[in-house]
Length: 503
Image: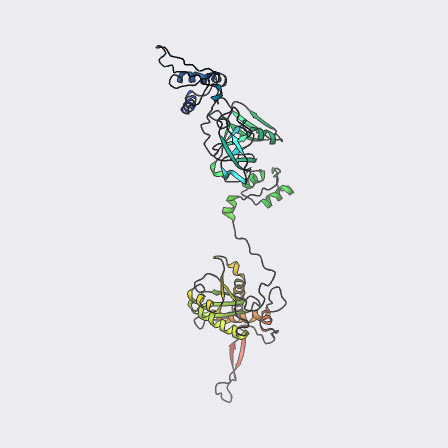
């Protein structure tokens, strides 16, 4: 096969001639296919190009099929005698109108997963676009086959398939049903390419055997690739092999074993290929961590408000509440908490929150621009949509099963839960007082925790002044409450003993 013009070769570029050891039924099939296409076979060429074993069969079938033979510039007819009942007329045709090509069919050439070593083609080529790791589409001219047909070259690229050497500058030929590996290309990149009657052996410059290709039944050197591995675009090297042998040990630790000589018998593993181990991905894959932002994305309070609902809490509070509705201002990280009996109350408390904070900051001057929540039904419903549309509030949602996208509110939930849990357990306070503990935790955190990337507390950013914490007391501690309501006797106690629960 050539890019410059036709040459004497097979239909797909296979120059290997049939041997006498070829089985008779295979040769007969080749002849039947040849004659079914009405190929023009000159008698002299048949003697020169076809082995004796195949020629004998040709002579047997010429009694039934019309065969054209040529002699130059003479037109005559040979009339058969009565004894030659099965001899067909031989018509002499002009030399300039005849075509002669010896056809040798590769019976499995139409298999898209078979690769043939071809000494007749100067470049690797295939008609399957999926084989390419990278492909550059361009008009690359035409390829002329042994039978005179031409196919257009649509592009070229690199093919990396397990079981094959890396095939660079491989041509992508339109409509080519066979996959061809150029012997010339192999000789250029490897030290030795040798053939014998059974196998073709390819040896690299270090003396290692890169590939062995067996001779197929159709007398060609064919390599069959597993269809399951044809979509893989990486080469197996020693590092990948030992990665599998050592129970898919991660590559970083595997390289440490080699570098420090921790174990014996481990060869030089070479460089790691930029590949993905599919079994590791299926068995070890985790979510990538979300990086923290090192800057403040908002410029004023109420520009963005984060919302979330915690619960249900297993123990009801004293007032029968089971849910905690948490709102956090993104700019100041100031937090508000509300306690709900069920989820349906979330919208009513959100309206209450909007009126409260916007009146505090001045309606029309600093109002809520955006709110962010998850896709739970207490936030994603018609009431919320109508209310936000009426006030011009943009409602943003985090991706499903990705709480990291709303990490501000998730982190605040954790802080409130942990502070409340510690306060309840440290003083052995009854569990039904959890609402008071959460409320106290929210009050304290607003006044003592500084906003990240600043030197100011949330209270100072929200109120524009520093807070005084001198009056703070320990949650759950014993306290004495002055009784100034009841009518007391002259010698009755003036105070009642109680527990400090909230501010």
